Image 1 (cartoon, rainbow, N blue to C red):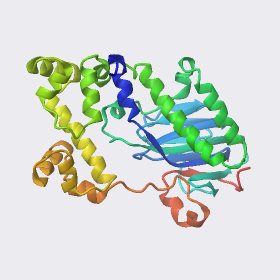
Image 2 (image 1 turned 30 degrees about the vertical axis):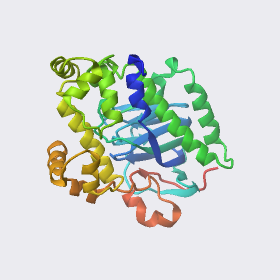
Image 3 (image 1 turned 60 degrees about the vertical axis):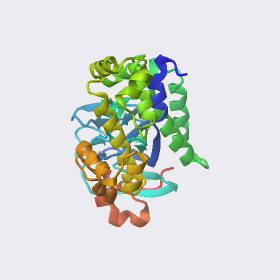
Length: 343
């Protein structure tokens, strides 16, 4: 039996980050890297030196040694040696594959040097998940350090691995980045998600939270107002009124949204046939499922399945593909000057 205070934690257990690619960048001023909007989350860790980050809102933030930031919704942003640098393609830097999907990058001018570890990650839930929609454009690790005694140790471990060129360092850095990103999200949630209102307040509600946890854990269940009211231990009318008051929409509407968001994952990510998804969700026919899906998402299931999840383009292209890929790479930069392998 889950304690009422832990229903939000229970839902968070199903939230997972999977690494796409990572880059260890040694850059000398002046330099600037453009990271355009993407469906993946961005993570940056400043190991040595400092730089500036232009947020999706257009504001400049100064980052220094030990800073770590997460952009959970993949908002477009810029990293640069100073706000005065105009970051634009093409990318004039040397890129070598160091370990699987971890790349070494070096470039820039003749000024101050800095060492940066950056990565992209995907969430295993739909981007319209209520928790993802509530997250800010940018989360900064320093905002949570005081309340998270374990974070400095993780940052120190990552700093050591970035600085050294040891066997297996790439894989260790990738795992540390995933853990740090997850720790940032957990700290944000535990500090109230900015403000405990709306969906977060509902998830923390002892009675409604139990219902939300069940819906998200088992979206394929044929939930009805009656079965959810029974789960909450309330009358049908009392439950429906309380749910709408706390969550902000009717139980039927909320359940439909969660089910269709799960369906979109099955169609786009797992490439399941429409008939299989309809059967999993308990629809009597493919046609009735398709109508419900389009009503919630605005798209036909066939469109979502055909489009799928676009294969992410590497942030920095390895040497063999560099000539043809730099112009299309998600991270493009102004990095003048000679380049060589990151030491």
